[in-house]
Length: 176
Image 1: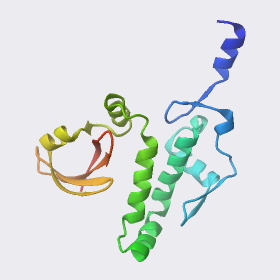
Image 2: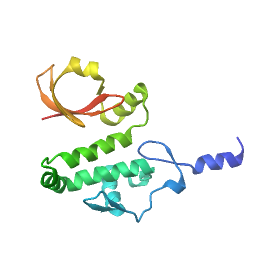
Image 3: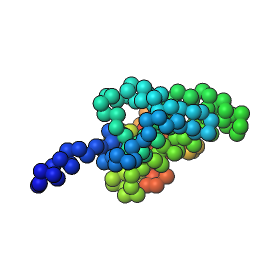
Image 4: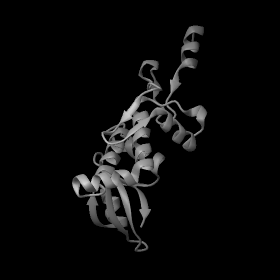
């Protein structure tokens, strides 16, 4: 490998979240203002939240992960406001929260390949179930995308799972 090739490889930056290489031209503008239609969020607010979640030195994100982090930030900080606005405008306090969560799941998806998606989901969320495995371990009570209310067969505990549409996987069991 030539010296020039080594230097190019050494200078390449990778996303701290997904591992994709970051094109300098596609890095998010530090001064950008995010507006989800209801609540405005500055990149500085997102950075503060990110520093709580990961080492500051790793705060290099590709555009997709940057957008996902902003949505997670909005859910975390403005949850109460979103549910009030949602209930007032749609009659369902969970509508806007669920819409944002669906966007996050869609943006996180990297492939339609079941094997690679399962690995990605399990790395991020822990155990993942396909539909057949879900039916073996849980009794499904109801769906309200991206969540499903379930009862675990092994111990009778009731909880929620999240799911993505395709490839269909259920994950992140949370006991109620």
